[in-house]
Length: 256
Image (cartoon, rainbow, N blue to C red; front, side, top):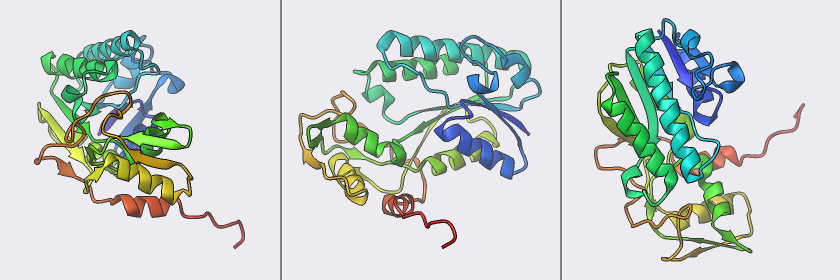
Protein backbone atom coordinates (compact mmCIF):
# COMPACT_ATOMS: atom_id res chain seq x y z
CA UNK A 1 0.00 0.00 0.00
CA UNK A 2 1.45 3.37 -1.00
CA UNK A 3 1.01 5.98 1.72
CA UNK A 4 2.30 9.53 1.37
CA UNK A 5 3.19 11.24 4.65
CA UNK A 6 3.08 15.03 4.23
CA UNK A 7 5.48 16.38 6.83
CA UNK A 8 7.25 13.04 6.68
CA UNK A 9 10.59 14.37 7.93
CA UNK A 10 9.24 15.84 11.19
CA UNK A 11 8.78 14.48 14.71
CA UNK A 12 5.72 12.34 13.96
CA UNK A 13 6.33 11.90 10.24
CA UNK A 14 9.72 10.22 10.57
CA UNK A 15 8.34 7.75 13.10
CA UNK A 16 5.26 7.02 11.00
CA UNK A 17 7.24 6.45 7.81
CA UNK A 18 9.55 4.03 9.64
CA UNK A 19 6.65 2.07 11.14
CA UNK A 20 4.78 1.84 7.85
CA UNK A 21 7.88 0.58 6.04
CA UNK A 22 8.47 -2.01 8.77
CA UNK A 23 4.98 -3.34 8.02
CA UNK A 24 5.71 -3.64 4.31
CA UNK A 25 4.04 -0.48 3.03
CA UNK A 26 5.49 1.93 0.50
CA UNK A 27 5.74 5.00 2.70
CA UNK A 28 6.81 8.26 1.06
CA UNK A 29 8.32 10.92 3.32
CA UNK A 30 7.09 14.11 1.65
CA UNK A 31 8.34 17.55 2.72
CA UNK A 32 10.06 20.55 1.12
CA UNK A 33 13.41 18.92 1.89
CA UNK A 34 12.41 15.91 -0.26
CA UNK A 35 11.01 18.06 -3.07
CA UNK A 36 7.33 18.05 -2.06
CA UNK A 37 5.74 21.33 -1.00
CA UNK A 38 2.09 21.39 0.04
CA UNK A 39 1.99 25.20 -0.08
CA UNK A 40 3.31 25.72 -3.62
CA UNK A 41 2.14 22.33 -4.92
CA UNK A 42 5.67 21.45 -6.04
CA UNK A 43 6.10 17.69 -6.37
CA UNK A 44 2.61 16.86 -5.05
CA UNK A 45 1.23 15.30 -8.23
CA UNK A 46 4.19 12.94 -8.62
CA UNK A 47 4.27 12.04 -4.91
CA UNK A 48 0.55 11.20 -4.83
CA UNK A 49 0.54 9.18 -8.04
CA UNK A 50 -0.72 5.68 -7.19
CA UNK A 51 -1.16 6.49 -3.48
CA UNK A 52 -3.93 4.81 -1.52
CA UNK A 53 -3.72 7.27 1.36
CA UNK A 54 -2.18 10.55 2.43
CA UNK A 55 -1.35 11.50 6.01
CA UNK A 56 -1.04 15.19 6.82
CA UNK A 57 1.23 15.81 9.82
CA UNK A 58 2.50 19.20 8.65
CA UNK A 59 2.98 22.20 10.92
CA UNK A 60 3.24 25.87 10.15
CA UNK A 61 6.67 27.51 10.42
CA UNK A 62 4.96 30.55 11.95
CA UNK A 63 2.21 30.75 14.57
CA UNK A 64 1.40 34.40 13.79
CA UNK A 65 -2.37 34.56 13.28
CA UNK A 66 -2.52 35.38 9.57
CA UNK A 67 0.49 33.24 8.64
CA UNK A 68 -0.68 30.09 10.40
CA UNK A 69 -4.20 30.38 8.97
CA UNK A 70 -2.81 30.87 5.47
CA UNK A 71 -0.51 27.87 5.90
CA UNK A 72 -3.17 25.38 6.97
CA UNK A 73 -5.82 26.61 4.54
CA UNK A 74 -3.47 26.67 1.54
CA UNK A 75 -1.79 23.37 2.37
CA UNK A 76 -5.08 21.57 3.05
CA UNK A 77 -6.77 22.86 -0.08
CA UNK A 78 -3.81 21.71 -2.16
CA UNK A 79 -3.67 18.28 -0.54
CA UNK A 80 -7.40 17.75 -1.04
CA UNK A 81 -7.34 18.91 -4.67
CA UNK A 82 -4.24 16.97 -5.65
CA UNK A 83 -5.42 13.96 -3.66
CA UNK A 84 -8.78 13.88 -5.39
CA UNK A 85 -7.11 14.21 -8.79
CA UNK A 86 -4.80 11.29 -7.97
CA UNK A 87 -7.64 9.08 -6.73
CA UNK A 88 -6.37 8.91 -3.16
CA UNK A 89 -8.87 6.93 -1.10
CA UNK A 90 -8.10 8.12 2.42
CA UNK A 91 -7.10 11.56 3.66
CA UNK A 92 -5.89 11.43 7.28
CA UNK A 93 -5.06 14.64 9.13
CA UNK A 94 -3.50 15.04 12.56
CA UNK A 95 -5.15 17.70 14.71
CA UNK A 96 -5.28 18.60 18.40
CA UNK A 97 -7.56 17.55 21.25
CA UNK A 98 -9.51 20.53 22.56
CA UNK A 99 -9.10 22.64 19.41
CA UNK A 100 -12.58 24.15 19.72
CA UNK A 101 -11.85 25.06 23.36
CA UNK A 102 -8.61 26.91 22.54
CA UNK A 103 -9.77 29.39 19.92
CA UNK A 104 -8.18 32.32 21.76
CA UNK A 105 -5.10 31.19 19.82
CA UNK A 106 -4.71 31.81 16.09
CA UNK A 107 -3.02 28.42 15.78
CA UNK A 108 -6.10 26.58 16.96
CA UNK A 109 -8.41 28.73 14.85
CA UNK A 110 -6.26 27.63 11.90
CA UNK A 111 -6.48 23.96 12.92
CA UNK A 112 -10.26 24.22 13.14
CA UNK A 113 -10.32 25.79 9.67
CA UNK A 114 -8.23 22.86 8.42
CA UNK A 115 -10.65 20.35 9.91
CA UNK A 116 -13.66 22.12 8.39
CA UNK A 117 -12.08 22.13 4.92
CA UNK A 118 -11.55 18.37 5.13
CA UNK A 119 -15.10 17.72 6.33
CA UNK A 120 -16.56 19.86 3.53
CA UNK A 121 -14.54 18.11 0.81
CA UNK A 122 -15.50 15.09 -1.27
CA UNK A 123 -12.54 13.09 0.07
CA UNK A 124 -13.01 10.14 2.39
CA UNK A 125 -11.18 11.11 5.55
CA UNK A 126 -10.27 10.56 9.15
CA UNK A 127 -9.29 13.42 11.47
CA UNK A 128 -7.21 12.28 14.44
CA UNK A 129 -7.03 14.70 17.33
CA UNK A 130 -4.16 14.02 19.71
CA UNK A 131 -3.23 15.31 23.13
CA UNK A 132 0.11 17.02 23.76
CA UNK A 133 3.30 14.98 23.22
CA UNK A 134 5.66 13.98 26.04
CA UNK A 135 8.43 15.44 23.90
CA UNK A 136 7.01 18.98 24.26
CA UNK A 137 6.60 19.15 28.04
CA UNK A 138 9.96 20.90 28.47
CA UNK A 139 8.99 23.41 25.77
CA UNK A 140 5.80 24.20 27.68
CA UNK A 141 7.91 24.85 30.78
CA UNK A 142 10.35 27.00 28.79
CA UNK A 143 7.50 29.11 27.39
CA UNK A 144 6.15 29.69 30.90
CA UNK A 145 9.50 30.51 32.55
CA UNK A 146 10.19 33.83 34.23
CA UNK A 147 13.63 33.93 35.80
CA UNK A 148 14.01 30.69 37.73
CA UNK A 149 10.27 30.08 38.05
CA UNK A 150 7.86 28.24 35.78
CA UNK A 151 4.26 29.39 36.25
CA UNK A 152 1.61 27.01 35.00
CA UNK A 153 -2.09 26.39 35.70
CA UNK A 154 -3.16 23.13 37.34
CA UNK A 155 -5.43 22.19 34.41
CA UNK A 156 -5.52 18.52 33.52
CA UNK A 157 -3.45 17.22 30.60
CA UNK A 158 -3.22 13.68 29.21
CA UNK A 159 0.01 13.58 27.19
CA UNK A 160 1.15 10.88 24.79
CA UNK A 161 4.49 9.66 23.44
CA UNK A 162 5.28 10.63 19.83
CA UNK A 163 5.99 6.97 19.06
CA UNK A 164 2.48 6.06 20.21
CA UNK A 165 0.97 8.79 18.03
CA UNK A 166 2.80 7.35 15.02
CA UNK A 167 1.65 3.82 15.87
CA UNK A 168 -1.97 4.95 16.14
CA UNK A 169 -1.78 6.82 12.83
CA UNK A 170 -0.26 3.79 11.15
CA UNK A 171 -3.16 1.57 12.23
CA UNK A 172 -5.79 4.12 11.28
CA UNK A 173 -4.42 5.02 7.84
CA UNK A 174 -4.18 1.37 6.81
CA UNK A 175 -7.85 0.86 7.74
CA UNK A 176 -10.99 2.18 6.07
CA UNK A 177 -11.68 5.92 6.34
CA UNK A 178 -14.00 6.74 9.24
CA UNK A 179 -15.32 10.03 7.83
CA UNK A 180 -15.31 11.49 11.33
CA UNK A 181 -13.01 12.80 14.05
CA UNK A 182 -11.48 10.53 16.68
CA UNK A 183 -9.26 11.32 19.65
CA UNK A 184 -6.11 9.69 20.98
CA UNK A 185 -4.25 10.35 24.20
CA UNK A 186 -1.94 8.94 26.82
CA UNK A 187 -2.97 6.52 29.57
CA UNK A 188 -2.67 9.00 32.46
CA UNK A 189 -4.03 12.40 33.45
CA UNK A 190 -1.76 14.90 35.21
CA UNK A 191 -2.11 18.43 36.47
CA UNK A 192 -0.09 20.54 34.03
CA UNK A 193 2.10 22.06 36.74
CA UNK A 194 2.85 18.64 38.21
CA UNK A 195 3.75 17.21 34.80
CA UNK A 196 6.28 20.00 34.25
CA UNK A 197 7.63 19.51 37.77
CA UNK A 198 8.28 15.81 37.10
CA UNK A 199 9.91 16.48 33.76
CA UNK A 200 12.28 19.12 35.13
CA UNK A 201 13.19 16.98 38.13
CA UNK A 202 14.07 14.05 35.88
CA UNK A 203 16.56 16.21 33.95
CA UNK A 204 17.90 17.84 37.16
CA UNK A 205 16.59 21.22 36.01
CA UNK A 206 16.81 23.66 38.96
CA UNK A 207 13.76 25.74 37.99
CA UNK A 208 10.83 25.85 40.41
CA UNK A 209 7.35 25.14 39.08
CA UNK A 210 4.64 27.33 40.60
CA UNK A 211 0.97 26.42 40.38
CA UNK A 212 -0.75 29.63 39.30
CA UNK A 213 -4.48 29.69 38.45
CA UNK A 214 -3.92 32.84 36.36
CA UNK A 215 -1.07 31.35 34.34
CA UNK A 216 -1.63 30.39 30.72
CA UNK A 217 -0.84 27.48 28.43
CA UNK A 218 1.10 28.85 25.44
CA UNK A 219 -0.60 32.16 26.18
CA UNK A 220 -4.10 30.64 26.24
CA UNK A 221 -6.50 30.61 29.18
CA UNK A 222 -7.45 27.00 29.91
CA UNK A 223 -10.08 25.41 32.13
CA UNK A 224 -9.59 22.18 34.05
CA UNK A 225 -10.57 19.98 31.09
CA UNK A 226 -9.52 22.08 28.07
CA UNK A 227 -6.59 19.78 27.21
CA UNK A 228 -8.00 16.30 27.85
CA UNK A 229 -9.90 14.02 25.47
CA UNK A 230 -13.42 12.68 25.80
CA UNK A 231 -14.12 9.35 27.46
CA UNK A 232 -14.22 7.46 24.15
CA UNK A 233 -10.66 8.43 23.16
CA UNK A 234 -8.23 5.70 22.11
CA UNK A 235 -5.54 5.55 24.78
CA UNK A 236 -1.92 4.50 24.32
CA UNK A 237 0.13 2.38 26.72
CA UNK A 238 3.39 4.26 27.31
CA UNK A 239 3.42 5.87 30.75
CA UNK A 240 5.17 9.19 31.31
CA UNK A 241 7.52 7.91 34.01
CA UNK A 242 8.64 5.03 31.79
CA UNK A 243 9.25 7.43 28.91
CA UNK A 244 11.18 9.79 31.20
CA UNK A 245 13.35 6.93 32.45
CA UNK A 246 14.15 5.88 28.90
CA UNK A 247 14.87 9.35 27.55
CA UNK A 248 16.97 10.53 30.51
CA UNK A 249 18.96 7.28 30.77
CA UNK A 250 22.73 7.99 30.50
CA UNK A 251 24.27 6.86 27.22
CA UNK A 252 27.10 4.37 27.72
CA UNK A 253 30.50 5.37 26.36
CA UNK A 254 31.77 3.55 23.28
CA UNK A 255 33.52 0.30 24.10
CA UNK A 256 31.88 -0.10 27.52
